[in-house]
Image 1 (tube, rainbow, N blue to C red):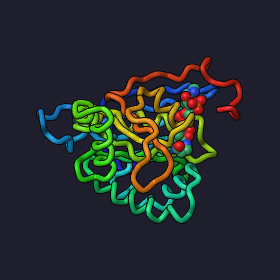
Image 2: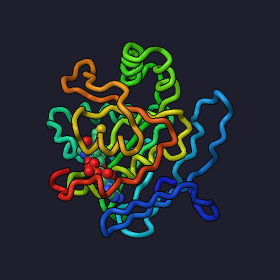
Image 3: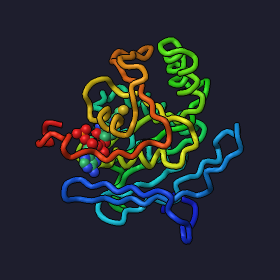
Length: 256
Ligand SMILES: CC(C)(COP(=O)(O)OP(=O)(O)OC[C@H]1O[C@@H](n2cnc3c(N)ncnc32)[C@H](O)[C@@H]1OP(=O)(O)O)[C@@H](O)C(=O)NCCC(=O)NCCS
């Protein structure tokens, strides 16, 4: 796959995700370079990277981008962000600058979803290893220390993969792409836990994260300088793979 840096021939797939949604079925086979073995206390820079993600039946394909490729795609990714979050145009310049800065963070991993070979992306997700000195990490570390104590703060932030953005173009939401991207993003990560923040409320994002095993660490939190309330959520890695229950879904997609 583009950006994967080599052939995958002879390598056994380590993860297999199968998503069934109504009559469609998307099967993503992900293989990783390297191994999960790292020396104790070694910083996880030698993460196994996604060597390829290939669609074997219907649905979009996931591709990993390295930091340079991610920065080159920022125009298209910021446009997806704007549509998915209904973000005011005035915010987009600083959002793009933030995403560019994040691309330089340790153990950065980014994925895009593309409908077919030549098409532009319809979704993206990325994260990195949390570290002191990163704005989000420091705010969340302080907050969890205050709200839940040192032990919890160390558990959650002492070795964390921080999921910064997960967005799907509105025309392609609700088809399992977000779920597949989060799974692929955290697959093979060596950190103890994954963390994220998401707007408060009964949103699709929160339902998705909960179904993947994320729990609220601090609900109703307002980040410095921003008004709306967020939930800070965390999950131990590896994520549990809980398929969505059709019985739990409202009959009409318009009521999601
Ligand atoms: C949140 C977001 C990333 C999720 O991506 P998505 O592709 O729409 O989500 P999925 O299709 O994977 O999951 C959404 C729903 O489909 C369900 N679903 C997904 N795959 C399924 C499958 N194979 N079978 C049955 N149900 C499935 C999920 O359980 C979920 O159900 P719900 O909406 O009733 O809770 C996307 O909707 C989005 O970009 N939203 C706007 C921006 C945003 O909120 N981003 C996150 C900020 S933290």
